[in-house]
Amino acid sequence: MRQHLTLVLYGILCLVILFLVQGDWINAYLQLVIMYVGINVILGTSLNLINGYMGEFSCGHAGFMAVGAYVSSILNMWWFTDGNLFGNALFGPKASLFLFPVTLLIAGAVAAVVGLLVAIPSFKTRGDYLAIITLAVNYIVKSAIENIQAIGGARGFMGMRKVVNAMTETVPLPWLMIWILVFTGLTVATLHRFVSSNYGKGIVAIREDEIAAEIMGVNTQRMKLIAFMLSSGLAGIAGGLFAHVLGYINPGSFTIMKSTEIMVIVYLGGMGSLSGSVMAAVLFTILLELMRPLQVLKWVLIPLMLIILMLFRPEGIMGNREILDVFPRLRRFFPAREA
Image (tube, rainbow, N blue to C red; front, side, top):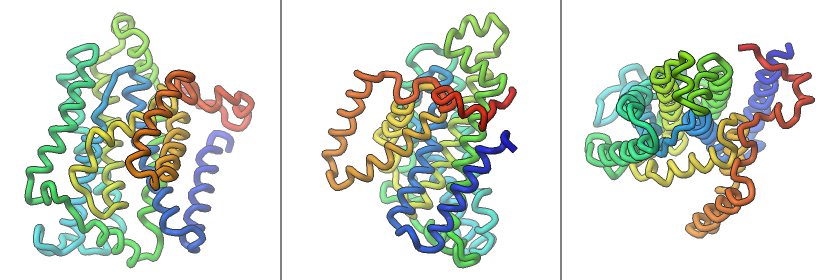
């Protein structure tokens, strides 16, 4: 039972949230904030795998998010809705209730393949080249989408709200909230299991000293590729969820500014700390919402707060520690899983 206490507590939290949503105890705005928190948790923890655990510097995560957002949106519009672009629906609206997570997984797989295409040339180099290449990929993806008029180009792509409404009309539950909670939990659990495994230890070894890791028999190139694909794929899933929360996407939603937001979550929480990224995602999302009335001024205050954090606590909130390292007595209730 103790081995699964975290899962049980997360399940209870999800049920409480769904109960409050279903009973209209929390308004639509708070529901939106909760969904943004879940998406930012996926983005922050997935980027932490590259920048924190592996010690590389990727700064184009929004590009992979854009790939997932457009792939899942196109698939859902093609499969479940009638329209001028794809004609009659392939499966019908009711099928979206069961196939929506499939489209998200396909979107994540496509984003992972794009990540692989980026990683293969990037990891043949050392140093800061990955940052430059991922930054370039972010711009390439954005520019490519802007010039594909079939999916709206710079005007954007819309209609995903029909799919969300179709799921709710089939069975009256907050399905988008459910899928966000499910994929957020799966993401954190997958990454926790990954970084606790031998693969994860190999990735940390690469961060500490790549040459020494190679000498010790670690296949550094393969581990880097796997970690980058996993991180890119999860960003693609987050992008798919993000597109359906908004109901409308355009290339301007996936600029370097979005990538910067994700990096702020990683550095605020601490490099190499999953629990730190989760806490930072919650804090940062709430902070953004509190500062929304300040409009452009918030993008002066938030970088200023980040500078202050870097000056007085450069390792972030958690550093490279997890919550059980800070509160060791909790290990009685949450025993560490053996790799």
